[in-house]
Image 1 (spheres, each protein chain N blue to C red):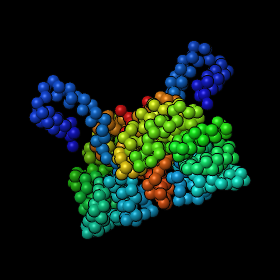
Image 2: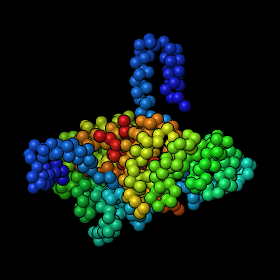
Image 3: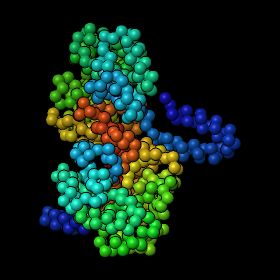
Image 4: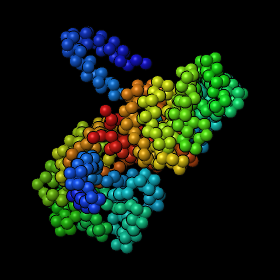
Length: 282
Length: 282
């Protein structure tokens, strides 16, 4: 996915064929590049947890209505001990509806068999990455599996009350000297609740961020709760600008933990707000 | 509604009380003003037609969920021949829920008794303006009533297939030499369907625009349909910048004519997108 290179290739051919002078062509290329560089390299997705109260058919219908085409699947839609046949069936169902299951998780791992099972599950899915939370004493074993399977793990931070990984900094301190396929799923709501601006996390850990859980929160601290994007305290114009600056190429997946039994209006408002900012910031 | 004057008044008192030097105070006032000047002078509202399939209690619950506090009421929630008691009861119900009924409409008027009834209805509501569509032969009679009641009428444009007022320009040609209390409710979707960018209408008719119906449309022409804001063809960053430039002080009311039996997700996405643009454009 190299938009800049493809652009030069295409623009070059087209302009030469049209008989443009190279000076004119260069100036047009510059203008168009400046414009194309404000575009996102990443896609919007859904964190499976948002759909906890809904079966697969209901979830597909909601994703279609929201025009979201990428899903990080959660185990209530595809149990961790599923057979290859079951996995193919479920992924095929989403795929037939125009939805790509791009990751799995969050998968919590407290024992070696948990780690083994997670990597086998993700391997059977044929996807290159999952969102996971390994206990500290399993980090080294997880790294071994990352190398063996060539599957990335994006470790998820869960805010002030999390015993293992409250903030991206706690993930970093555990993985910074390990295989680079061990990276981050930055949950921007939980990050903000620790007091850190998620844009700072993007700048610090950019190349190693493999997934994002996108939401807003109403306040800093343990009492902070998920809220519709735009109603809370996260600086989304800065966040979206920073994603462009670091050339983020993963997914930005919405996670909405409010109104779990009727999340569609809140998800719609959140996605709308996010897209409104995307359409506006330079 | 003079935010700037109120700000100076408040800032002056507060800063003096706190013992600031006048130099420091001046610099702080300047910074805060620059910030406040990117704020909207208008409020977001709901065009009653969006709630056509819902009774008053359901409508209140939807408006509260969407955090919309201003309603332009439609006659299915308050019939045009309602008694003063009925009007007080319905307006009181909205008011108790934190929602202000700021206007009524769209009211179509084809006979003189229609005009008479509309002005009596609006007078009994105690509001200064309604959205209306008078037949051409009633425009002069309507102007007479505008003067008699001192109630404004915002004439609504309804797109290419409308026999009376397809575009704001058709409204303008009928009212430009009349009392200035005869003005516009610019329906930005119908305006865009005629080929006109609604921002152009704002620039042309600014001081005489008393209401807005805010929506997006998927294409120009008779076949164009309402769609979630952000999915269509209207340039919302420009629209919101232009509203600031003309210092619009009315309401911007969402109207969503898609999924009428289940409009909440589409309305939520639309409002989210609009707010995301508001939070981002300079």
